Amino acid sequence: MRHRFENHDLVTERASQLIDVTDDVLAVVARVYSPHTTCAVVINELEHGFAQDFAEFLDEVAPADGRYYRHDDLEIRTQGIEDDTAEFPNGHSHIRAGLLSSSSQTIPIVDGRLMLGRWQRVFFCELDRSRERKVFIQVMGE
Amino acid sequence: MRHRFENHDLVTERASQLIDVTDDVLAVVARVYSPHTTCAVVINELEHGFAQDFAEFLDEVAPADGRYYRHDDLEIRTQGIEDDTAEFPNGHSHIRAGLLSSSSQTIPIVDGRLMLGRWQRVFFCELDRSRERKVFIQVMGE
Amino acid sequence: MRHRFENHDLVTERASQLIDVTDDVLAVVARVYSPHTTCAVVINELEHGFAQDFAEFLDEVAPADGRYYRHDDLEIRTQGIEDDTAEFPNGHSHIRAGLLSSSSQTIPIVDGRLMLGRWQRVFFCELDRSRERKVFIQVMGE
Image (cartoon, rainbow over all chains, first blue to last red):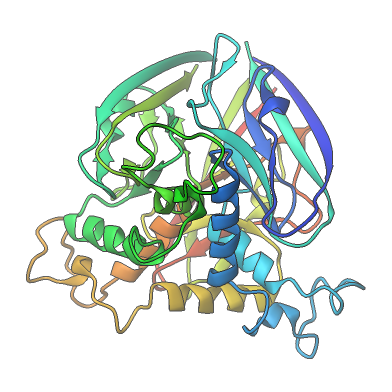
């Protein structure tokens, strides 16, 4: 088994943005990993309507406004406080990440070919705001 | 490390059908992968009541009827249009797949034994309608 | 490729408890697996507010009380009946596990270092009540 590990830097533009990273992994395989607590890696179809449907769905399920999140309450919070917490509350993003629960996706390769289905693309999904992000590509092959 | 890769063809019968594919992977292991954008692979208990509970839950969270999906709006859609899109709108199926976000499940093997828990079975889950499907079984062992 | 497999026994204390198992895998890698049908493995931030937000969110999405689950209906149930089913109905736990759909998480390692992001921790998440549990740690390295 050979291994290769790559870090790809990203700058996301908005919440629920889906960034197609499929071509980044077309070399051999196999694992696309997000090292962030408010992002996800999802496999779905590349279709703008779906991307907006999914963004709206996440907005409804864990809204950014109109719901109380302890994570954003600086009166009680004691852990992981960053300078920007007050300015950029993101309790909803953590809930969305917990709900999707997919920091990574693994795709089989056969004969050097990623075994994605016809409509499948691999997306890095921003669940917070526009931020600098990384996506790790881990390649395993023979 | 040895590898083996198998494709198993399926015909699903209905939305939210759970097809137990556990025995297909009892040989060595380890990864059950769905190459479809409107299916999921889930690990849970084989119990019909749960299967129906889960189907109802998915119907409520992302209903097939009574909710607007851009993915199904042929007035605005430009990508991935198939002949059957008008006849079989499935925007809800894509949302369900995005929500579960589990195109695959990986199970450890020890001494050639799949380390599933007592109640765990591996299911291929149809999130659209009755369709011909594939499930990939990727086996890795020593 | 070298492999190592470990079982860690746990006793959970309450529903939605998040048990940080990150340090258990700091040795080499790579896969944290739950052999239970009413638990999940999630990667998120170690912050008590988030932990409570997530617990509340799961309570709302699939409430323990006030919703009918066929899984808990002993009038119709025929499979997997345990002595404690009547006393401890857990249909909601199975739905939560189905929703999160993450029996395992896999994390890349590079140079013997787990490539978790700055805020990421790996949690074993109890979705039922206080119970004795196991978590499997599968280590793969060169």
